[in-house]
Length: 321
Image (cartoon, rainbow, N blue to C red; front, side):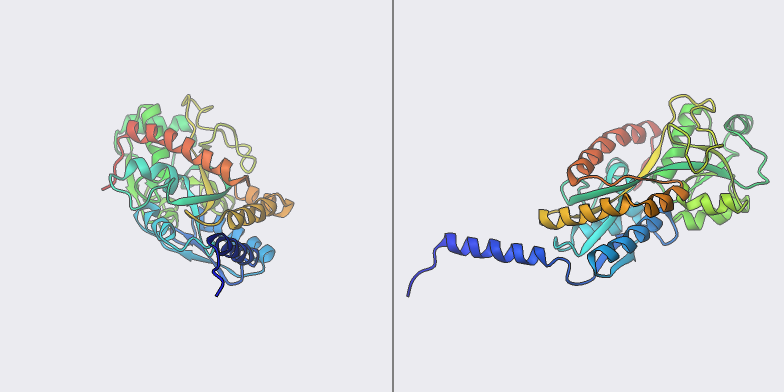
């Protein structure tokens, strides 16, 4: 019997792999959101999933796996099969902040993932209940200085970009405020709207409906420039806190080892969706700016953000056990 050479076997396997990749996807895709339903990460994931479902011809199911500042859902994806059928809507928290915040991480934000595409950049908005007697950053600073620790600020959890926006504000404004963490923005917002907690630095998409509906007032945005969705709302920096800038971002990642052909196919599909006028307008109405880039560009962005937020975490003294 004629022996089959190792080279022939390798060629056959390569051809089989190419065929399998060309058929991708041939079953439903799961997109994990590592936070509860209703928050900005969930909003972004559902927007992208809807478009991917149309372009890829397979259901894209959003699966919320919340807990530990996004670490539980992210770890689930890190350990999933690298076949393109389990994706993560990662955030500045799961892939830039947590690495410095948690003494023990269940996953490596760089080594355990294949970046696919940055989806959007999102400013946080400093909001308060309409009847809270603070209408500007100066008012908030004055209130905090008059009664140290009496002013409270909510967040979607310890160590999130929402929490650290407040910590950075305290540091740069030279004030004290009491942090009140919740399990997600959807749990925190009712207490802010009722006035039980004074203010919150929440992601724009989470609070835009309440701002438009008059249930919250926007005091300032945390980005370096004003948001097109809130053109009359000043930045915190222009309101007197020099050097303040703290924005969130969201992007799709796959488990490390996912074939490049699959990663590229997903990246192209996401970038194409994000460039449509419909998607741009949809995200802009939420206060988000659509991005869409290459896996290599997203990987470089993640590494730069890890370095940036490590300094913020260290300066704030924030820690999570």
